[in-house]
Picture 1: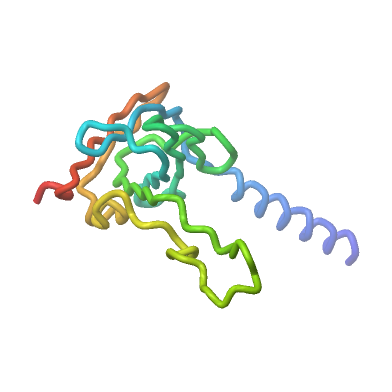
Picture 2: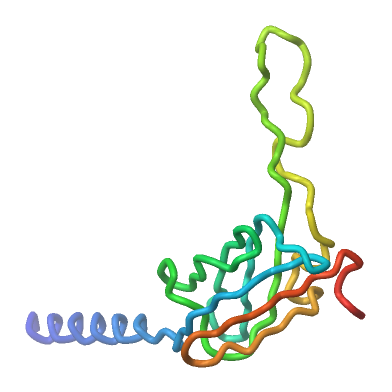
Length: 150
C-alpha cells in the first residue's frame, strides 16, 4: 500500500512539474519609442499576445531596455502582439521641507502626469502592434501627441 502511494505521489509530482516547464519560445527585442519624432525620456511597454504571458520593457531616453517575460532580459514570446506604452513625468515629492508648516505638498505625489495620450496605455486602444520573430528584433514605436490614428 505504501509503495503504491509513493508511486502515485511521484507520478503526480512528475506530471505537475512537466506542466510547469512549457514556456513559449522567446526572442530578444530592442528599439525606440518616440512621441512626434522625439524620444520619450522614460516609460514602460507591455506586449500582449493571446495565450501567452505578457512581456514588459522599460524605456530609457527613447531606448527599449530590460525586455522581460519570465526572467529579467529573457525577451518576448514569438508571435503577434498588441502593445501598450505608458510614460509619466516624475511625481512631485511628498516630503515637506519643514514638517511644522501647515502647507500640504504641491503636486500629485502619487503619480506623475501622463506624457502621452491615454489611448496608448491600453493595448486595445493603442493601435500599436508588432510581430516578434525568432532571433533579435528591432522595433520602432512612433507615437503621436494627437493619439493613435483612427
